[in-house]
Image 1 (cartoon, rainbow, N blue to C red):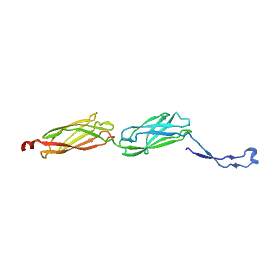
Image 2 (image 1 turned 120 degrees about the vertical axis):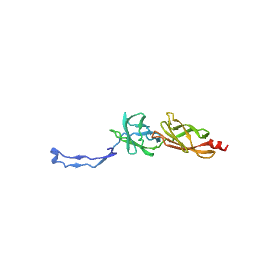
Image 3 (image 1 turned 180 degrees about the horizontal axis):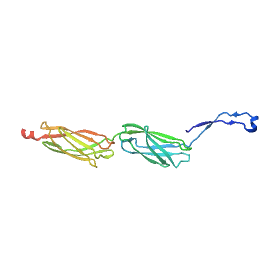
Image 4 (image 1 turned 30 degrees about the horizontal axis):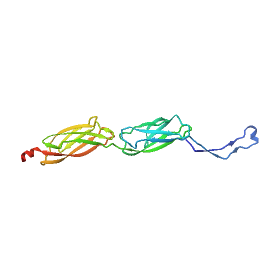
Length: 239
């Protein structure tokens, strides 16, 4: 335990020939103030992290005028969980931190702890970290008109701020027609299905697109686009 102040007290106990000459004595308590070498923690980290994805915490130790230690033990806590134990040197260090894929989304506390070491006092620093999933962006190429009956072909690409989203499950649905596919390493996909939509001569039909990412740090996407459909059968009959 590191104390800032201790109380000292002198005790005199006579021995040998002094036993008959002197009485035991006790001095008054005298406060002694202790000084330890301190260190300032200068962390650097992105304020946003993603579940299941590692991030780096940069850390620089500033001993000011105190003689620096060659390295120090550092403990990193995410809320109450110890997530990293490592040793850092005098220079800036990058400490990789892993985020549990099931970690709750929202604000969390990152606590950096330097335990005491000899004449060096402990130190700590608390930073705020927001854990969130990365929103997806959908690029979809579709024909200007889709003809019923017939086959409609779609191409698209799914990305996020982290880059292409691969191995994501993509489902397209229009009326009673539905098709599922998977994105490639570049985030691209292709799909086609035979449409079977009852309706008027020309109609603007909702096209539902659902993207379920394979990586835990990406957010599920649900979008509704629209497709103009021409019923060729009705056109022929009316013509």
